[in-house]
Image 1: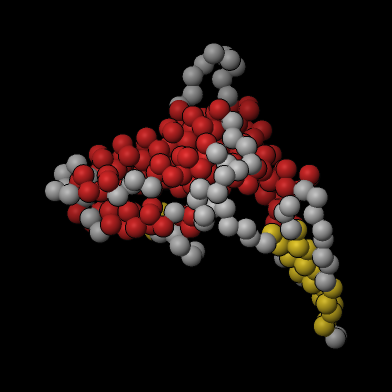
Image 2: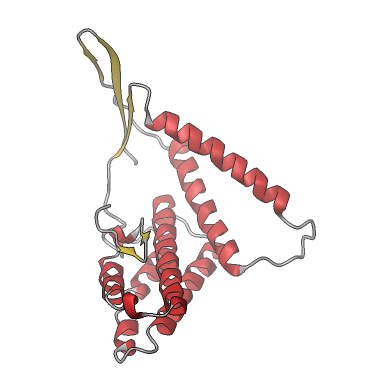
Length: 220
């Protein structure tokens, strides 16, 4: 994927809104081959937490609001990234340089705190939302399958949660749940409440029973 990075077999999904993260983890990637298994685990954790933080940023900006739980999760992800990077780089002579290269974190946290402000130009860049329907393999059909999968997984989680309402859960787990909830809320708001114009284009090929429909949803 464009503007993403792969480190230790893990490919990011949200680094397109943070060139600084791409640069920082590219620098770290130059050293992972000589790291211990433990330090490699720290790098993987830092990469995952950074990607999740950027996913949260996308979600709150798309929705235009941020909850207290999401703010808490954002600062938790940020602290985890710096903590794991510090552990992974502690044996390197330029470990402080690695940490200083993460100065971009402040911008992302500020953007999350103020989701309607144009702080991070990449996450605020307007993109055309397009849903294409074509010959059986469709975005809509895929979306429905994913929604069914989400409902099944949520049901499994609900059944597996402790019956004791006062029981504690790992902070990394509750943070990821907060991000997932933010994403779903943003998706729901866009599909259900967006006052969008729909442009339908039907095209037929002679002799082939194929229909292509393009639905463009321009977010207001």
